[in-house]
Image 1 (cartoon, rainbow, N blue to C red):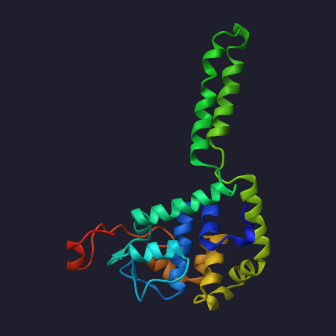
Image 2 (cartoon, rainbow, N blue to C red):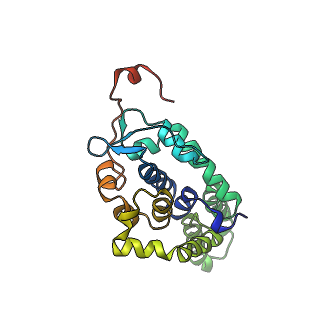
Image 3 (cartoon, rainbow, N blue to C red):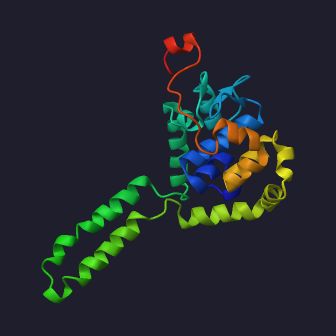
Length: 228
């Protein structure tokens, strides 16, 4: 299992809040690197060259951003979804997340015992179905994050208390151009970190509410081409 301290920002974001949180984290880091600017209200535009290194989700978001798009619209692009899925699968293999199939199959499997209830005495006809229903509901709402995942997240927050302090006291804005601080802050603390590190960009670019869906491109050359 990969140690919690070795997890990157997008992995931590996904562990904390799912796929959208992972995308928010990567978008915030792109903004901190100077690779994103706010476009029309609720949309973002890329600037400069693609980020280098192993930041696969950042690269996918940057590559799939043509013209101006809403943040959640961009996060829904095929290449971005695939990269997030790959991150998710790694966390499942490391024991931090439950596979999506587990949360679906366990409740379904538990329902297979319902026919057995019909053979029970009449006095149990009410009690047993209620117990079964409770079990099914409990399994259906089984959290994706495992106990190990929750423990890792708590350990990371404890290790990054200084970030939490910066977010609370307002000093985080002074580090808005430091990608690692922005990334780990947003990954661990979500919306409060976005408002602390990148208040104007987060609001104007739609990182808080997902932004606006354009379903169009702003320049003719791209409209004639295919999405990549």
